Length: 304
Image (cartoon, rainbow, N blue to C red; front, side):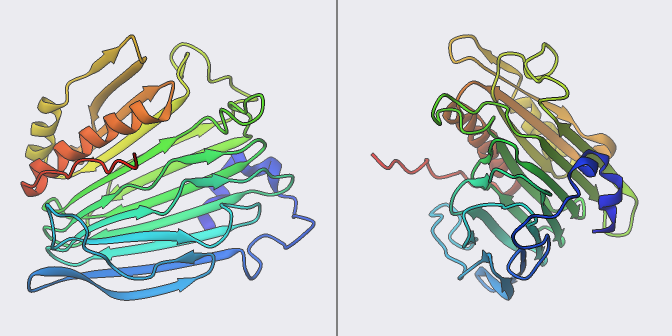
């Protein structure tokens, strides 16, 4: 994680926790997943896990894509704690089909020292397809979290990766909106033998730079982001089917932008509550799936 030296937003938080030191045993979560296409389905061919990160097995629950390996990433702790260092490596072989999600929201716990980091390295082979759709991120009061994702894929592959960032525990006690210290997210994408396609980084420090301003989040609380990394032609068709939208009643705003170097699209959704943002993100992901692999997305499961 030598690139942490280029994260000046973490400079004020170099103190060590009074309990376990940062990156101590029990605070370094490791997960390595490798998938291969075999005859009529994708299988999980390599699995390494180190608590608190855990994967048990690949499942096949998607009725529209029964050949797709569906995997839950599980945390055996209560979320990300101060001093935690997590790394997730995912690789898909040629023609592999994978759906990754998490068993619960990623709770970034309150901190009084140091910070938490999650690094993700994702590699796709020719004509591979990955849906990475974790549950929302909830940064608690005084939390500091940095996430860094590096993606390598050929133009024939497609990755649909979503993140829904909440403002905190909005309905906890009197409300805990934008009371975290730092949320820093970087995504870097590249071709297998070429230069970077793009690098995007955003840093949110609510106490230093208020987010409730026009041009930032204004009156919105929930930020949804979907990265669609795919061929230019697929990206064009998805953009045509998902024009910008605005709903005064919810309220909700959404729209797509093209990524540099014909890498694909980034789709942003702003809302006041989680579920409308989640529904819009799901709609975009469904359109992306239909254009990438020609399959529909099953309706969202209702717990009612």
